[in-house]
Length: 176
Image 1 (tube, rainbow, N blue to C red):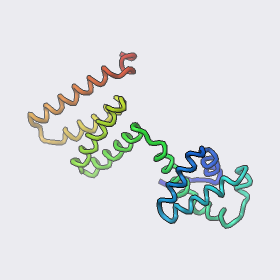
Image 2: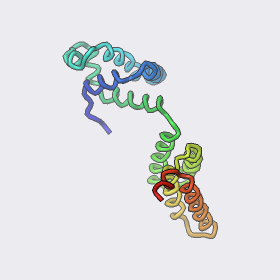
Image 3: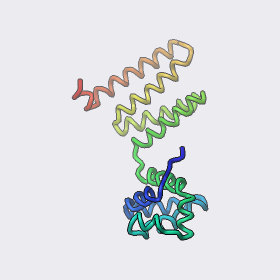
Image 4: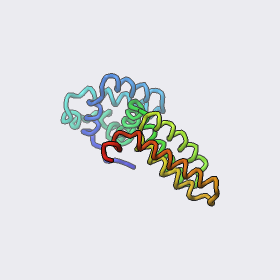
C-alpha cells in the first residue's frame, strides 16, 4: 500500500538511525537489487544535510532521485529496520499474517505447518497471548474439517493447552 512520503519523513527516519542500524541497512541494500543499492547513496545524501529545510530546498539531481524514489526508499528502509530488529514476537506476528493469507487462499495444509511453528516459537518466547491468537486460527481450520472422534480430541488438546498457558501467564493471574 503506497504511503505519501515527503522528504521530511525520509530525513527524520534517516537521522533517527543509530550507527549500527545505518551499517546494517547499507549492507542490506548492498546485497539486494540494483535499485536498492542506489538507496545507499540516498542515505548518505540525506544524512549530509543538517536540516529538513535545507534538504527540501536542494534541487540537485540526487534530490530529484529522492523525490522519485521516496515511497520505495522509505518502505525499503522500514523493511531493512524490521529485519534488523527481529524478535521471536515479531516473527510470530509475521507468521500470523502468513497464516491468514494462506487460509484466505484455502491452502490449509500450508497454514497448519506455519501454525505448528508459530505455536512452538510463541511458547519458547512465553507469549501466551500470541499463542491464543494462533490457537484461534488452528481452531478455525480444524472446524472446517468434517467432524470425527480424532477432531474432537484435537479440539480438547487445544483447549487444555490454552488453559495451561493461561495459568502460566502472569497477566492473566493478576486479572483473574
